[in-house]
Length: 339
Image 1 (cartoon, rainbow, N blue to C red):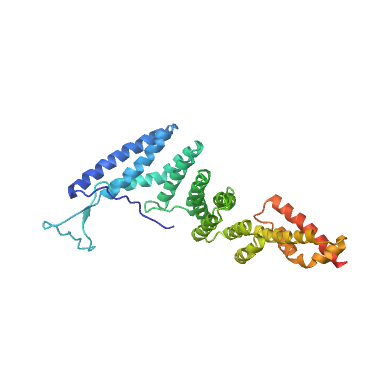
Image 2 (spheres, rainbow, N blue to C red):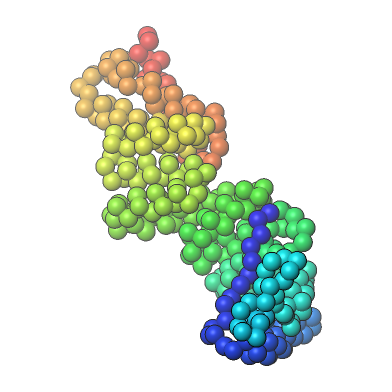
């Protein structure tokens, strides 16, 4: 699991001797804030003030850690070098205690607890922030032997909160992270599928197809593994320009994910509309005559709809029923044409 370092720079440059005093003061303030959270959490009386106290303590601990390093110099102001490491010598006052505080936050799942508090209060914005902080800690150098499943669940919860906060872009990003780590519970695929729809639909409703396509391209760049985005790109082109213009985009989507039932359905449904238009334009008197007239148009819609029905993945019961109904009519015409 990739690690990163939590770091916040001191707000201003001070004299060397002031750093240690500042770090100690920040640490004490952080500890007071943390105690304000912990006492309420332990007593089952967690509230908004306590939740904010946890976040405040994290910020202060982080600042204390950043300001705690005092680099030593010689009398002439040149760096004092450690002969063993070859690096400039330094001293710390509270770093060890800060690290223990972060380790305690991880062990006790403090930010997960606060995330659950906010989610219960339907404050999804702060829930997402809290889950995100938990994810940060789980990936930091202070975490030890964190299972991928634990991190995956945190990413899912963060994405869940993002979704209901209408932050669909970060929902997609965090849900994708969760899935990459093996998370499959709680209908994660539905969130991954629907969040892009929510982003794109707002542009389509405004007939702003340029923005819709730009948003899809950005999502593809962020999450190239989400092959459904290529189908979405084709759908937007179909809405804007019609099915015929969107065929190349659908073919690209199928080349990347040939066993996507919904993409096959879209192709089948589009070709069915071509058949329907031919039926509307026909002057045939009998169904048999009509069938012979349109028979050359039937192969493609039957092929795609048959595949959609046989695959029956990532499509709703309503779409599946529609595919079967269309297929039944098309096959009937094909059989009539053979007589």
